[in-house]
Image (tube, rainbow, N blue to C red):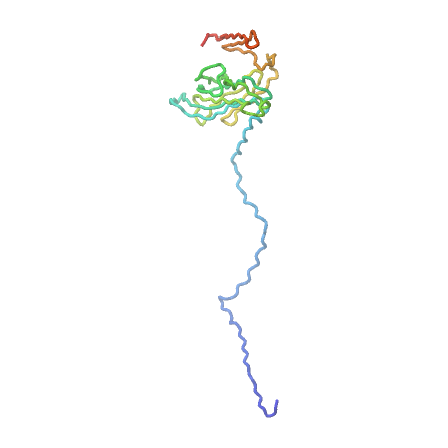
Length: 274
């Protein structure tokens, strides 16, 4: 500094600004607690109430399972309805059903014959793919509950081949007879089922048929080991049976281009020709 020069001082005012104190309603909130750790596992499903309803019935076995090596028969009720006249003590009802005969055996079943024991005063009105074995005309009264009604195949459908001979072609192994008739006294929801069904051919044994639900009856018939057949020649024909009419056809002489034959018809009906 030079002598004689006056000193100059510069004053700087330094101000420090502090925020005003918070008001009572502006006090800071305490810090929130940390969130709980996240559980990434899937929560268990809610418990469902236990059901007390009965389980559904198991399905019926197929014909091949129910009768793997015999003759399977079934009678199935397919429908019905009330018909006039109104009669509280003896009301008639229409019924529809079908009788099935299936050959699950190893050999051809020649001239199949099945029976049904009807028990509700049934009157058979129409049949398809089958006829009554005794030759009765329709309508036919059959439902006395004691005597069996026999059915046989219609012309061209009397023999049931085996699965071996047909490569499993059910159309050649099976016969289905559709039945329409009238029964008395069994209205809905009851079902007019027969008392029994079975096979009428010689050499076969059938147990009592069993119900499958309320609309079907089944049975499996097998060879009777105690049966002795009258067949001595394997010509494919059944032994002669009793009946009302016997027809015999005999070739008595043959030539190179023709032959002579004799045909004899015998009426064995005790009441004569019908």
